[in-house]
Image 1: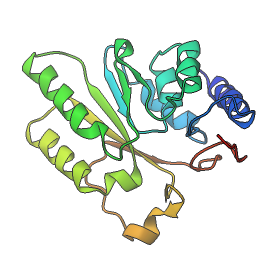
Image 2: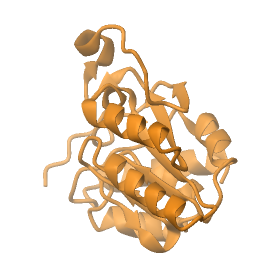
Image 3: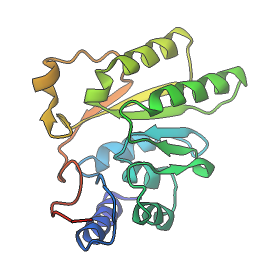
Length: 193
């Protein structure tokens, strides 16, 4: 998918949300199209992708058809999209996919497989204990897993630096900064469920 196609997809989802057609929380992607397209150029379709609640772009870039992604969002799964047949999982639990990714990568190594696991997390999650522990375990056992940190400078609506100060990143294999053009949750208009 191109950056323009990704942006158009999210604009459609935002419009559906603002019309009250999606009766659950959504977390829109944006401002990170170029970085994600570059990262996904190194991810094979047979690899595993695990991510947090802001997952629409990643599902699309990993080959989940747009109609299936939209159907999942419309059904209320924007922040918990899972497509096992595409080796794609997300979770609304902070750091929730990290130990799952670690387990998948351990299974790949034990089976002498060629796949890799790619875990996308935010910079606030990268500062948590679970991220450090998973990163340490992965490094100690040379597991086929990569941690990608997307840094928008915010955790929900709180500036990360205000909470953590200067964060020491010990986990990321890839890290990029971007400015999210959408609110943390929703599409800019209040929708009463």
